[in-house]
Amino acid sequence: MPSKKRSGTRAARREPQLAFFLDRCTNSRTLVAALTAAGAVVEKHSDHFRDDARDEDWLSVVGAKGWVVLTNDKRIRHRTLERNALMAADVRAFVLTAGHLTAKDAAAVWVRHLA
Image 1 (cartoon, helix red, strand yellow):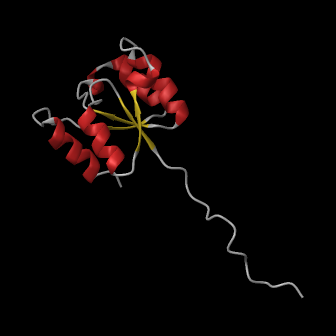
Image 2 (image 1 turned 30 degrees about the horizontal axis):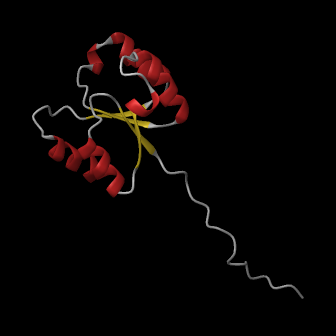
Image 3 (image 1 turned 180 degrees about the vertical axis):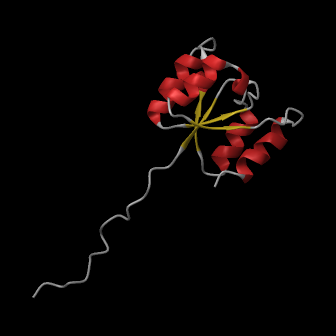
């Protein structure tokens, strides 16, 4: 008679890990190192797009990939094209608006709120 106990050989099902996309104004070695050390998957703007790529263009790609945008661009809410592109691409995004922070302090904020 076969055992009804489930085998331990099946891998546990895991949710896919989120990838965090750092736009041009957020991309810093300090932040990349801090997020990576905290176990986050990081995608940098410079690894996927030209430096002069318009926000409206890269946002649709990032949205399609399901990446979560991290940005310091506090003016995005005032720019109609970028704001509309962000919403149309169904992008999840977090904006850090405290402009007075050093790269190290900003990285600490992002890492503290990763979960």
